[in-house]
Image (cartoon, rainbow over all chains, first blue to last red; front, side, top):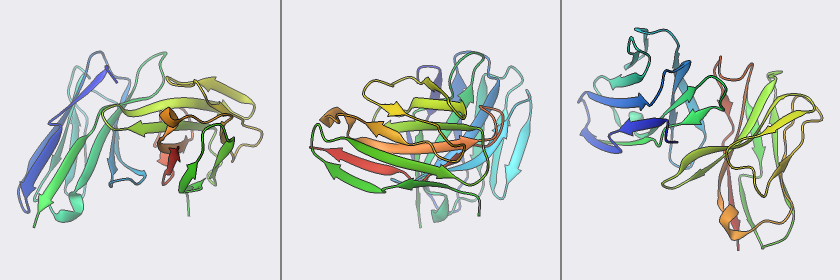
Length: 110
Length: 113
């Protein structure tokens, strides 16, 4: 989707390291979703953010939506091999279908 | 267990042979949709349905049909598959469009030769 960009495209980290994935929107978001996909499998819902400045955490994963609601970051603390996969942000815009970002491929080396 | 079930998981077919990929959800969700995922293009929405008998085109509807005769089922129909429809397909459902968590099926890997 051209509306959503993700960075980096891919990331390789050593187990135990922290990392951040960014999702940037070309316009104001109505809602921002984070999903994780294991290679070739279905998507697993992680978190949904709707309010500017909102922050949510689930286990070692924290996601934030900036005040202007145009950028979100996903932060993983003390990464583990189980965190490996593709992280996708998804968004809802007024009057449009749900769109996904291109994804960030994460590898965690033991 | 809340889930979205797609069948088959893998399918190899020949050009022009009609096929249907089934999708069923057990959560009484109103909103269902189909996506295809291709390298470099990400996930793109094919069709969606806001409720029974209500369907609409997504971003890449050409070559596909859908139906929503019951709330739980949302099959994807390829009347005359072509090689450019080789892809990984996902079905998803949610209570409402874009306001709540969407549940995804495990995916159907389709190859058209």
